Image (spheres, rainbow over the protein chains, first blue to last red):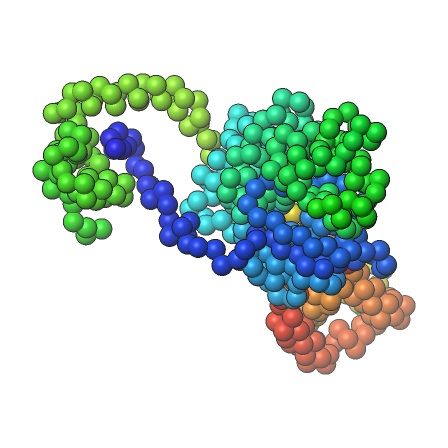
Length: 281
Length: 272
């Protein structure tokens, strides 16, 4: 029963479920990479023969520095082009030339170094990004407000970006990534600069987003993964070392491995002996 | 909208809780109410007149909501110029465009005071490369902090490149127009080389990145035209009226290449 809706001012009600929402998907995985190689610079293969399939859920991307996490995320964001192998987003190959506008419209991306315009207010910046992401003009104000509220910046929305702290800037970065309601959300080190309380809030947001979005979060904080991810991807030297639920990663580690938590011990066990670990799953 | 509205019987039934209505009627009136303001108003009138229990419930909900709405519903009007402007140029382009305008005015001043380069017009000499500098600034990875973000959005591509180029030309051309008019140089004499250089920058930019293309072309211009002209104090062939068909041809080729390679601009410079 929806009595009471009529009492407000003008509402632009739309049905809660549109045809596009219930249409069956024509692909098995949101992200599917087969033998993916990405060259960075002249020689180095930052991603070197990766087979990865990711669906709806929160996937934590773990790996040591220089493992190729950022390169992988930039490739998935269609900023870098794969050198070899195939990459399919929503079942559409994004390897070759051509504009991937339809694919890009459904991707949210927070780069590791999040650059912004200092003179813009939070709202202006997120609006600008919404325009760049081709959000329909009529939907932009509402989408921006929703995104800003979700990252808890509604009270600072009309302040200039240069007046914000590092953690707030990071949250603006998350807001611009989710403003177009993406189906693939790529976050490169999103928790850097967030204080513990904000990290907790962020994990809640991740879990919320993970119910209908394919979220890939790159991080070096193992506890973030333990708290918020349904799935862990461990990546080292451009290759996949492990993919599975956090519990499975815990079972890889033993008391002899370094780390403060079972998950950290599992992680360091994998990095000690990648070949053996690959055999176990 | 010329839609059929719900009958008074259905609206009243709905206001009383829908127990007198068939299930499909409830379903249909609910769907209709979501879209129709007129019927929402009618429902609201019925509720407040005939169903006191429901009216008081609605009032309770509203009194609970109102304090929250009072806090959140204060979205101020944005600065009116800034939102539309950012769709045409990035804030990083502004100082560059100011510099380009400044250089033009300086050249004009030198032309008028008639020192320096003798019979050669400095405005004419600089006109072709000035917009190129602006275009370079509009797509520079080093200058634009949001470059990485821009490279990943659906609107990135030829459309955005052309938009930013147009805004550069929109600033540069009027200034040159004034300069040309004051110094008495024919419009076509500087406008054609100016547009030709811009289109070639974009065409070459599709291959090596716009910033590099701008650097290369500016260097070529400085070496092939500016330096000899200043050395000999005579306007080179390239800038005389006889050279105009050649500039027209370059412009056409540049535009042709840009159109043919339009897909290349989506990944502009990001992987280089």
